[in-house]
Image (spheres, rainbow, N blue to C red):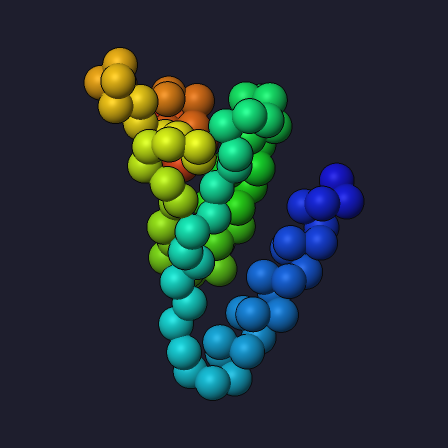
Amino acid sequence: MEGRAAFVADFQAVQMWSKQNNRPILLGEFGAYDKGPIDSRVRYTDAVARTAEKLGWSWAYWQFDSDFIVYDIDKDQWVRPIHDALIPEEP
């Protein structure tokens, strides 16, 4: 998975900087545009969130509603595949 390898390498470089400078990392404003295929959006969202967590980073998804939607305000419900990619159920 070429795209994943690229962002993982970037994250590892940030992690090295973080450790060298004794600074925590907050990964903010990542997300997947809602015009893309849902399966691709879910894989990307899960991969980014899990990689950040493995590195001990906190993260923030962009955005709650609108074009990177995780919650559909008009329907008053979660976009369950994206929600579950961000916050998977415990096994």
